[in-house]
Image (cartoon, rainbow, N blue to C red):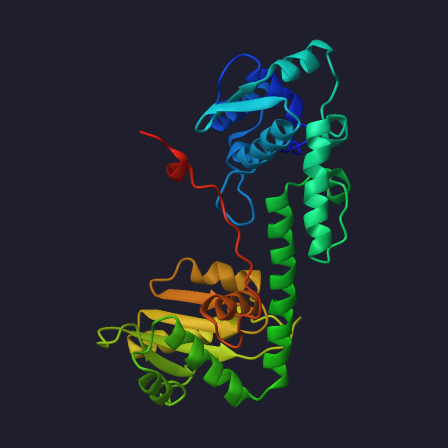
Length: 308
């Protein structure tokens, strides 16, 4: 089974908290065992890769229940059920969710304050359970970020294809330099596209001292026209003829599966970069993109409030 949503996790989290002080990690282990989650499901991360999905959802379940007065935190990183929380459990509820929490005055007050702040910032306030019944706020942020990245990735590839082959060559120069290859930008530009060797579009230094070289092949193909094994085989043949051990093959399209299988067992180290990875690298290293909006999220500093 998959990791339950944060509302489904509220009841089992409160049950464990009613047994005494506990931590999110302990609750996660207990719930994972009870549900029979696989190791892969226990280790599943948020899209950001910074926290386990199960831990994050238990954290938000705990947070919302604390706003309803069902859970308290007597010490840093620890929590337990309050008398109100135990009283709710004594009624043997089949489920605890945001709709149930809205029956508590403390939680309604919390929602009103959140809604007022949203309205002041020009945001149409909606009940928390109306925004998403399954995902936590962090998951919603990550999902929105992924959607924006996907749209930007597609736009980058469209613009690359709309420009000339010379522009694509210069883009590869800019990207390799931004990634730390090729020494100076001038050195990289002088080498790329001037090797004169068949099947190789350019050569760049792997480091500033030029202790090793990387041979580059770049093909600007339209989507739906994958680079096949024959093209990659030709590139590898050129590497062998040059006595080279490292190569990078870049395309705006994709690579066929036979092409990818072929490079896995070579004596040479050949990296295949398809259109999606090319766009991701451009975004990561700031090539062809610029920041237009920065949203900073702050987290409570537990050390600040700790007393010796």
